[in-house]
Length: 292
Image (cartoon, rainbow, N blue to C red):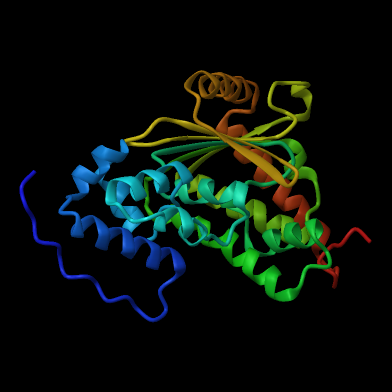
């Protein structure tokens, strides 16, 4: 290996997060060892961009990788000891990797049986969901969770990537979350994204009956330089799956859901009709159309 002089260490901003500090140490140790991003990636069996994202704090590190870094860079257990700092996230532990991976996904296909997907939620809808889940949550934590959820929608800033396709049960459209005004705004938001051709959205109608994957949420993600992943979610828990055979089986389940759902145009008609119904329900109601 050719000898290299380590680059000048970048001075951290005083507001740097623990993950940024952790990543900066990785960059420093890599350069000190005379390794390029490509060489480091090859040793870890990941891409150059993956290592770069670790170094700037945009990716969470896994325990196995931390162990390998300590071995390769001879860092006396630094990366394992400080793994918590490298994995810090505003999201709960079982979902944090998923929220991060959304920003790198080429395609995201999502199924939700009861709620509008988090990536599509308006502020009012998201707030109602958070408060329903934990009605005695401290205000500071409510705002923290709300901000963390809304920030995920930054992936839609690109006009084309990722390709996002959601299949949502009609129950999510018909169930009042918050009040009628909240629901009207939420459905208009989805319809607007559909009309701008930014997302594909299908509604699985009540008449479709029982189908696979109806007992929980499913998210499928594909990437440019990585294997596809599946994330299964239920109340307060979730599991990220990378086994190719299992991911393939969940992809088939999603295909069945899409085939049984209303076509996109019919789904849009249903969404806009429901939004109009909610708007009528909220008119003249000072409470916005609350059910109580």
